[in-house]
Length: 102
Figure 1 (cartoon, rainbow, N blue to C red):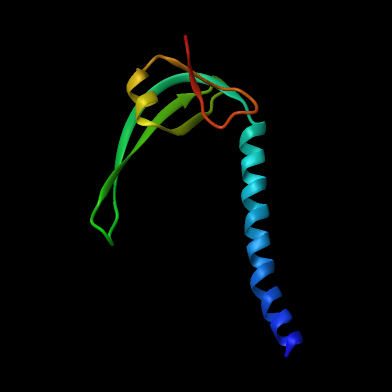
Figure 2 (cartoon, rainbow, N blue to C red):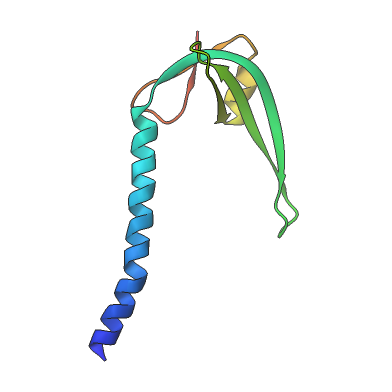
C-alpha cells in the first residue's frame, strides 16, 4: 500500500517540480536581459473574463530597440500614463520592469 502511495505521490510531484523549474528559468532569462529603446506606439487591450464578465485593461508600449527590432512591453497603468510616444525606456539587467529614461 505504501508503494502505491509513493508512486502516486511521484506522479503528481514530478510535474509540479518541472513547472516550478520552468518558471524559475523564465524569470532568470527575463532578469538577465537588458535593452533600451524609443516608444513608437501605445495600445490598451481590453480583456473580458468570460466566467465573471469582468473586464481588465492591458497596457502595451511598442518600443523600437534601434537595431531593426521592436518589442511589445506590457506595463502598469502608472508607467503607461507617464510615457508618451518618443520617450525612451530602458530595462536594466537584473530587473523585471522597464523604466522611463529622463
